[in-house]
Length: 109
Image 1 (tube, rainbow, N blue to C red):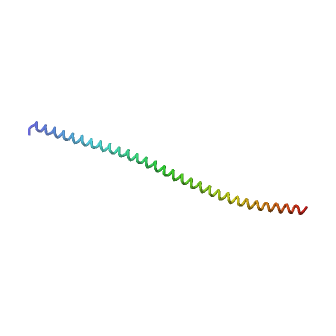
Image 2 (cartoon, rainbow, N blue to C red; image 1 turned 180 degrees about the vertical axis):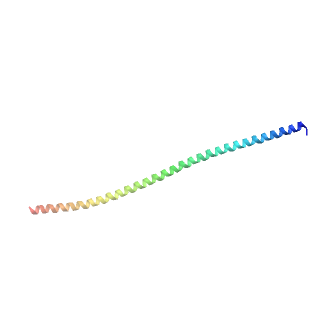
């Protein structure tokens, strides 16, 4: 082989090596770019999921509060009714007591 042929082969090999390296760098950059895009998508989806979870928990908490409020109101109404009935019974007793005291007072005079 002549020097020119050897030099030509070396240049071809260098060119091939440069092309392989350029392709590898391009593939690496594409993978990095794709990975970054995928990471952004994952983060965006995680944000959406977190927001949805917060909204769901808020709604569940709101439902619990309304349920507890309804229970408190119902218990309060029942207690008020019981107190009213007890007060009514006490009014009858008080009227009877006053009548007896009045009669005793009138009869003792």
